[in-house]
Image (cartoon, rainbow, N blue to C red; front, side, top):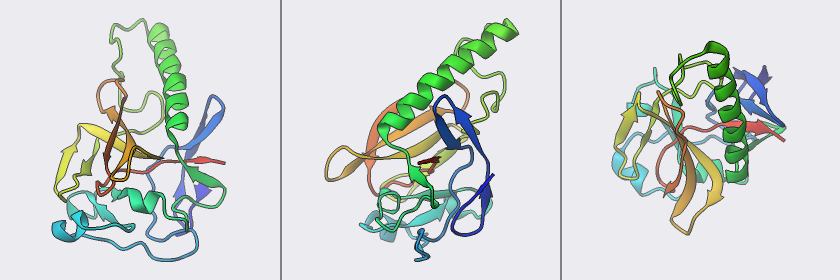
Length: 188
C-alpha cells in the first residue's frame, strides 16, 4: 500500500515496467496541502478554469471525479513519489493488460474474447465510475471508467482514456478540460 497527502491509503500493483495505483484518487488537497474546491453546482462547474473535484452525482457514496485543471495543477494532485499518467503510460498499461487478459483467457479455456470473467481479473479495479460532462451533468455510471491523461489536445481539450466496464476495449480520446473524470497515478 501507499499513502496520499490526505492520509488515505491505497493499493498499487506492478504491470510490466510500471507501478500503478489500483484505486482511484480520493484526495481533497494538493500535495502542498492546499485544498481543492469541491464544486457541486453545474453552472459553477462548467465555468471553471481552476482545479476542482466532485462526487459522481454529488453523492458521497460514489468516487471522486476531478477536472483536468486539478490534474495538471503545479501543486500536484499525485502523492509524493507518484505522478499523473501521460498518454504513453496509458498505452503501455494497455499493452500489458491486454497480454495478461489473453493469458488469463488461454488458461481458463474461455470463449469470452475481450470480456473479463469478472470485474477484477486483472486487478486494475476499473469499474464503471462514469464521468461529469462539461455541462456539469453526470453520465455513464456502471458503463465506463474514464480517466484523465496529463496530456493536452488543444487549448480547450485534454486527452482521456476510457475502459468499458464489461469488455476490454480501451478508448483513447479527448474531452473538454471542464469534464470530471477519475484519476489514477503511477510511481515515478
